Length: 138
Image (tube, rainbow, N blue to C red):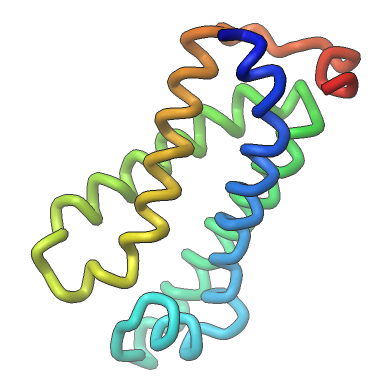
């Protein structure tokens, strides 16, 4: 099973990191992102909150991509992303019957995959970060 994670870690976290980083659209184009991605009515009074959320999640995605290449970034980034993404999945699941949750289903699905992958990664590989040579050779 360790071989599975050795082979898939980098591509998985690069792809899901890019998907997560796409939330930066909310920081830079809040009205467009809210209406086209989340499929919600844009409310100008929430602009600061939307932009703040967008930059936080967008940077999380960038850091996930970096963690795919930097062994010393893995544990803190994976632990934080698993916590953040678990909460997002729970919030969407708790509101699944509400029409406003529909714009978040795809993101919550990706977040659930990241959480499950991270749990599997730590269960198999442990919390000891791989050496830099291990990361670079993958």
